[in-house]
Amino acid sequence: MADDGPELPPFATVEQPPAPTAVPDPVFGRAGAAAGWLADRLTSPELRRPTVVLVAGDHDGPDDRTNLPGPAGLLLSELAHRWGATLVEHDVATCYATDTEFVVRRGHPEPGTADAADRAQVLAAVAHGRLIADREIDSGADLLIPGLAGRGHAAVLGALIAQLCTLEPVDAVPVADDDAALWAATVTAVRDATFRLRGRQHDALSLLVAVGGTDLATLAAVIAQAAARRTPVLLDGLAGLVAAVLAHRLAPGAEGWFLAASEPTDRAGTRLREMLGLPAVVELGTQSWSGAGALLVLPLVQAALAGRPVTPAP
Image (cartoon, rainbow, N blue to C red; front, top):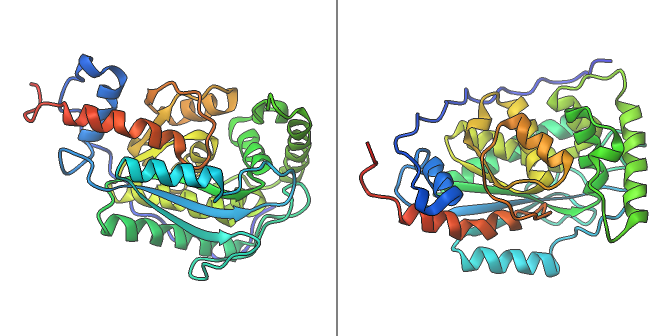
């Protein structure tokens, strides 16, 4: 069944990053390799304005307790402040949205019961994401860290992972050691959503209409536009990886501007990272959807960048 409605304006052709100019310094290990990767994509020898871009939206279904702000939001703000990063949050679709500039709707239905949004809303969200990325980059952002805020994303991400990675629902939802009942409810919601996806188109826009919703559409567009603007993106957790795969489908070649903060510890995250062919800075075992893991590795990369020779090795 085809999705009717207006077409998505194409993203600019993504230019491939330049060829590596220096051999990674073994003194800094994987952080040094990541620093070399960044150095080939930055216009200055150091990070001047790393920026966390949080996109907020709510989804009905199992409550995965991922609301921000709160303790997690305070931790994120503290980490950003400590490491000299800018943090911006844009409300796109929470139930009580107040940031009217980018609000597309208030909440999304449970993924197994109805489409997350209509095509016009998703297109509007993509346009918002492009604008958000442009604003931050024009303001000096030289590294973007994408993240999700809000609630109810576990089933949404699980359904998208099941479709993108051809995984069964039980493999698409990471096992929650502390809450078996929540895990089981999420798997059930993912199963119901995958039933609804049968016989439908599975391009990025259709998946966002059916399951992902306007918050993930905005986040994917932020990532895709960053790549189109030759700005590196540091990814952390399932939310960032799912949005990055969707961004790659919106703007082919974008993955050349993506770096994983940490190696995933679950099958779903590992499959997503392998699909994009991403290098990773460290192995932290973090499960954050808000970019906290990326902020944890940021000082390692900054230190490795500072330790690089001014003149690249021959």
